[in-house]
Image (cartoon, rainbow, N blue to C red; front, side, top):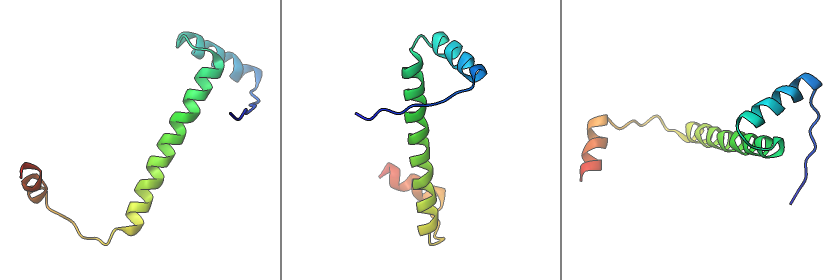
Length: 71
């Protein structure tokens, strides 16, 4: 398992401490969860951007999509 060190200003650390306490988790757990969530969001965005680059402009009407879903 890798270890990462972050530096925060005193003010930012104070806020981080309060938020983690409010969430009832350690500061380490709060930061770990936040980073993992941001990574997932970024991966989703990367996937969308890749799909848009590969899009050939062909569209399927909603009525056709519903018909396929009901079949």
